[in-house]
Length: 457
Image (tube, rainbow, N blue to C red; front, side, top):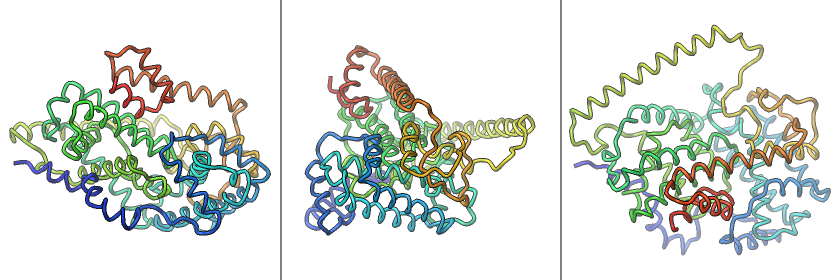
């Protein structure tokens, strides 16, 4: 008999959560970071009272608050930290980065209770400022903290960054090696067979968006949306039973999707997402994704439920042959590209992930941020930026090339909303498109929340 279910149960975070529930009730949440102990610690009490409310997030509002003259001390602290982080040492270990950034967040969150306008905020508005700070500093430090960005310096990296890169490579190799696997070989119920292709495509598309963003929160939302699509289908089919259904589908999604740097992305979220922001659902889905990644990295033929070993070997050999052909084509394309393209006049980007200092959403307001952070001189356009790990940092957080920031932000938002609506219509072809659009508007185009509502109709 196949041992897939037993292997998966080992990684099932639901099992771990149930086993630790009593201990956490008596000893407190182990994952929660220690809160400040002075008078400004009341900001945490205000936040805790509102943790169950509808999430509120507005990065532009946080930037406007930073522009308030009364917030100048906060701005000076941020500028000083960013400068020191990038100049005191060329490379920090992953553990050092995590501690430095987390300690700085705690320091600024404490100062939010001292300086206006932040000391006047409560609940969701205070949480928004905390989220905004995380997005701001991680956007600037992304090329120093995200392991794939450090690949050119691989020989000098610490063991944790190296481990990220090694797991990325191993995950990619394993996913290609076993991409031919059928749902039945992962013990996925036949009940889902007619919906599985559409499910995997949508879930994989959402998961692959993690590489489009730099803030831990934004990456986490991509993970949430991907996992909630899977969980919503399982719930609708009454198959909600932990690792026996959800994690195999997540594994199948990863095997069938073209994903890059997935291990590094999950570690980045784990390191730089503020501990107090990890709650219930988000923590469960992140743990599930990490479990699926660990499972894939270690899979072999004995992992699957194989009815006909000869047929399985034949499919395996066919896939290996196809992989060799694809690699030969890729090599020819690379050679042709070298012949056609002129040699670069300067060093190329260290990674495909750092063409821009921040993700698209943050770039729409970069000019406004630049008004209160000093500009050191003419800047390159975002797509022309070629940062290196050893280069001196710019004091300004963002460049300012846009003549109409608000219009650009509106266009980006409308494009994303159209894409979301199109995705959901393809997922629910039998449903009235107007109903889908109404639900999207009501839930502010959040994919996971919208899917939950549509499945209940």
